[in-house]
Image 1 (tube, rainbow, N blue to C red):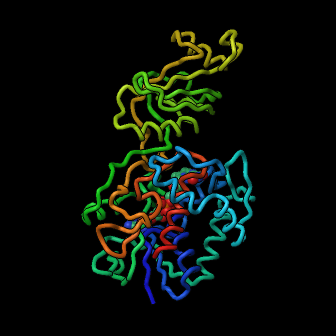
Image 2: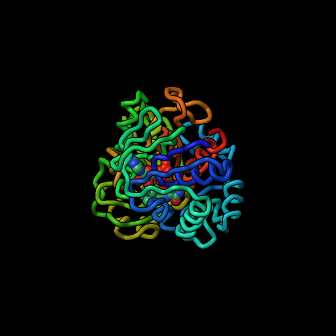
Image 3: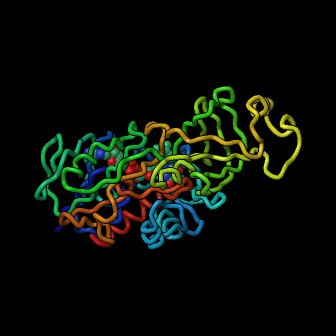
Length: 354
Ligand SMILES: Cc1cc2nc3c(=O)[nH]c(=O)nc-3n(C[C@H](O)[C@H](O)[C@H](O)COP(=O)(O)OP(=O)(O)OC[C@H]3O[C@@H](n4cnc5c(N)ncnc54)[C@H](O)[C@@H]3O)c2cc1C
């Protein structure tokens, strides 16, 4: 009989627990979570609707191609099929996969139900402080394990539980960690935007570093008082994080692609006035990247345990019987369900190999 401890009862940790028990009913599986409930973050995902997968072919959505392999081995069709088997019907809205109810609560409800049915042990409001020699050290005593799965997440949205404190424990254990940076978040610009704060507009955005085009995409832009937001900007924050340095990064915005006419006839009057007063080109307004918004405003963390510390099955190369899943690994993606897909597929990979 094997005892598995899972540190972090978020999306990847809960899914791993379920899949391990489904494959090995004789294993004892314990989830340790410092929140007072499991899956606290899932309720906030996809604006409460939980966009849990994406049907687009996997290409350059992740910061590292290694993720493509893992995600393809437990792909969106398998995720949909699995969730149907436990009671969650899904729907595809322009390639974004949601529960049919369009409510994250449905996904949380069926995952929690499965956890109960499988007799997985849940330890809530317990802080895991460290581990050594098959013992988990917590603020409520020690617990024995044969294998340990680390699913503590990143540092984004810490009020939902993922505060990154455990990353220091991992550093102490000798893991190399790529420095954290907020991703899928608004960005601050050098240019002043407070006069158009709150305005939204459909745009085409090209991201440049110097003269090099890094990425282009269309979508809705939302002005903030000191920068830019909206899903298209969230995705740009991912591609900015993928750059080796953040020097000379600009966003070139076309507010009316292919259209000609007065600014007032094409744009919100306040936005037209802002562009005209600042002598900005409606087809090529340039904003200069200054910084990201902080972790409180970011959905995922760029950075984490670097892949060269791990084997292909996500076990540690440094310590026996230790596995990593989810956002604690240096893998992150653009918006669209890819981050939860990584959480599920990395958990599935470990459930297969443990
Ligand atoms: C507002 C918001 C919206 C999002 N929307 C989407 C979306 O629609 N689609 C998508 O794909 N992705 C989305 N994401 C990203 C996605 O939620 C994450 O990538 C995913 O939750 C990562 O899963 P994880 O298990 O690695 O980490 P988490 O789900 O963050 O779980 C980590 C868990 O570990 C616990 N923990 C940490 N340290 C300890 C410790 N020392 N002891 C005990 N417990 C500990 C935490 O409390 C937490 O419960 C969103 C994120 C946010 C914040």
